[in-house]
Length: 335
Image (tube, rainbow, N blue to C red):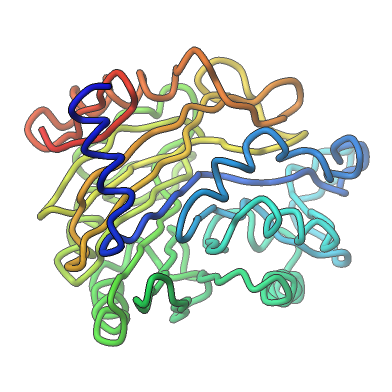
């Protein structure tokens, strides 16, 4: 056992730390258009990765699309072109059974079937005891290890807490920090696709849309009181850095996106991120568990550890001074 892994295992047993796990995009199939729901009606889709999600004090995911059973989408046009998601509400228990405790509804698919569907999604998550954040002004709240934990989720849209309104983001995070011991910020932003794995300076564009100045946003919310930042949206992994002793994961990739996503190459590679926070909210240690999606989007553990290797390389390239180090065992540490 290496010294880094031994330290991580000791710290994992320390009652003073809060152990979080996080994944990126989750969409367990869609009923619209037809033919894109998983085998066994989704009941076995998360079997292989559930133990990784369950082994934490709290586990976070981005809900890439609504959980609802009704409504129509403005994205569905004549000729069958309908890149919109609507996962049945009966799938909500699968998230909870797999270990998800916290979720973002702030993304570009949450409103695919309108505001009534957003409310149905929120009721479905409430019914499972899953804490969420997404619409403007929303702060999710829960407790773990005797600490009050807040979740504030953002997207590059005024229909949600907005990544591009940094002043409002700071105020909302300050509000959360004033009443909670730990503040988790989530954001859905950045360019998308195979060429979008690098974190750039300044605003990012995708299809003409402003997808956020992510360095400025993440640093601002940490300055305002956030303790860890989980990013998603580019559909590929990105690097991770430490800023003022807090971890920023700029993209956790596609974790479980059945049926409608392109999953070739890096698009099908992901990780489960573990982060341990001290009593002051600072990063203590972390670990990566590599995963992949097989077939049409079945998440599996990846023995080739491609996700860990990608994050190690991208963190070194994009953040030569502040990027995390990733050991051979996937343990994260400061550079």
